[in-house]
Image 1 (cartoon, one colour):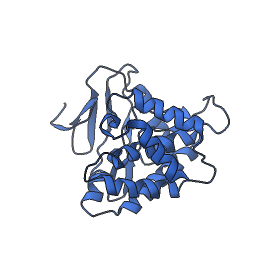
Image 2 (tube, helix red, strand yellow):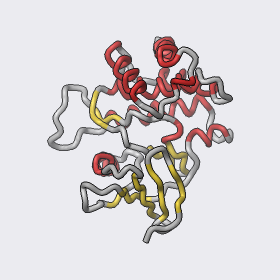
Image 3 (cartoon, helix red, strand yellow):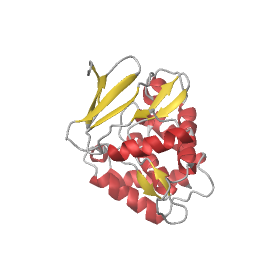
Image 4 (cartoon, rainbow, N blue to C red):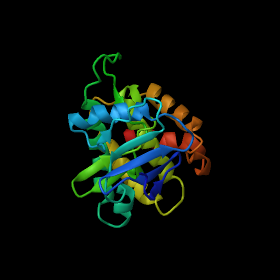
Length: 226
């Protein structure tokens, strides 16, 4: 039986099932089978995602997963529980660990292809007593790791240029994130262009409120990437 509504995002609502499990339901009727498959693959490899229960229906709009308790990494930083430099380091570690997970058996990909999150930022990381847990795998797919790093950096750059009270800490998180990226991860013109296009196509992206829009955010990412 579905219990109380305990959270809502841009696309889905989350309901309590009991003290240990929650149900995430898409409001637009879209299947969550892709997110479920990725999370089911990552969890046994030790990557910090919520444990899920098989839906039994690939077309299901519901995703049942173990309840994760704690503030978002953003809220933890605002409360002073985590420093901004540490937030950047946590995001960098999560990206590096994700890209080190092998692809599922039978998955085809170019050399260097990895599982990507493509929306990894402080609001999509839960700060639990046992460590960070990554949520919201709506955008996940396979591709070059540099694209994932660029997307995270671009989201932070938009926030850094947005003019809110979060702008200064976002700038510091962005700097720490890119300072801790592996040497093999290069933010070349191809991944930067792909990330810019993805953000431009995202109706929920905040670049319209950024002075200079996406071009300013891209320039800030390139400046920090060195």
